[in-house]
Length: 581
Ligand code: ATP
Ligand code: MG
Image 1 (cartoon, rainbow, N blue to C red):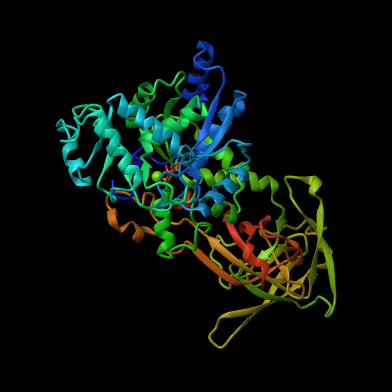
Image 2: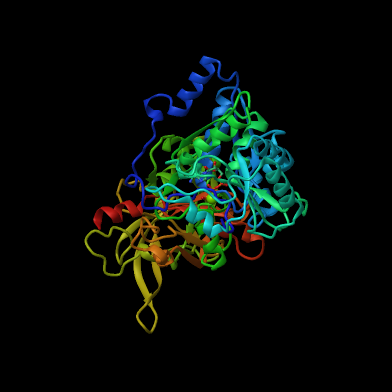
């Protein structure tokens, strides 16, 4: 039981249905949890719905948690009930108050609120202790001195029954005295545990005299040095649910085997209307890792820049990347609630944010890899302002002025000196449209000594102002652009998938999962030119860089050039690659 809370751990990546499969059973009507709630209310088992979200404050929330949050908070909301936020802070070694703060912030950001129902499992330590004493008195709990390793050995295997601890038959008096000694600090870490006396031959290993308490001489963020014994997850969880009057305790599938024990404790304590635990499938995404332990490893090894790195699926990372609560909620809604673990394709999450930003994000022009263009027939020293549409999805968003002058920037890859057949953009002698502005024709290519294209000389047709030719002639390409004289310098961080493979936790990567990282998950561009209106944006604001993707201004922008994080490309380039590959 070394350091962990003895909570079951999440499945490691390679289980579950194939990527992209939507196991949502909601589409068939109500999901199985809502059906159960309906039945419970109809039968009078419960007269209200009280749920809880029980994060362990040992890391930041990730998008997997939002599935649990949306389910527990959403369910209570739908049935006129309430939801408690309870920090499952039973392990003093891994928990930290900074995590408590970030978790609260993230839940609020998602648009959910626990009102005055903020609780800590550690608030119930005294009550749990008294209840443990009650079980000792009933003869169903005992103090054991087997070592951690011995306990494991005595537990047996799935095929073989375990054998009883030599301390199993102690008298109630002796157990009471021993438990008291544990509390008083007379045992060192690992020297004593309190165990439930259930059944060492039970086919469910969780029922083979599970641990309720262990000795841990450690400072706790909430209770300080008051305790040197700490309850195990199984002992703390259901009892906390009962204390708070929770009705529906919803958790992920890896707790399925704990359900029997959850019920056993409540039965022994004779809780009048006990809460019930129901399990649902975890959310897993491909091309990423979700577990806090794995995320912490990436952070500690400096492979990402902290809990809010825009490449990791934490809510603070997603927020910084430019994801919105609405898109995340739409995504988890679409995934649905089911009993079968599956891996959801990251493309589905990206689809949700594209939907949102396509409608909501204003359009702007920025040139990521600038190539200078001189409009040789445009009067020197002159400039003008043209009207650009802010958002074609929202006509009421109107237009803005964009300056145009004699020197411009276009994207380097929008020009080819010797274009192949399918390349329709700018090339020598060819005419294209500059969006919202004019038709231009490339007359001359300027190169450096090595033969690299450094500039283009073009002419414009003043009759095409606004982007259409009065004589009806057509061009095959429309380019975005920025006036050199008016441009603002930007830094752009193009984020991509964190892992290059769908399932970095697959058996074949085993201990080498870090080698599956995508080496190109971040590309930093420091010579980006943006239209002047970008200078007015605030950190957290999103826009679409036309033809390039959706971008969100980063908090790092406070000093120096504004920084823009790529939220997502305009189209799913990975899906295309997979089809090709
Ligand atoms: P991780 O394994 O990622 O570290 P955890 O399960 O240890 O997460 P907790 O803070 O203990 O995280 O979880 C709080 C609640 O969130 C639990 O009820 C848990 O079932 C749920 N939860 C955690 N991860 C997911 C997920 N990927 N999908 C759905 N629910 C999740
Ligand atoms: Mg965990």
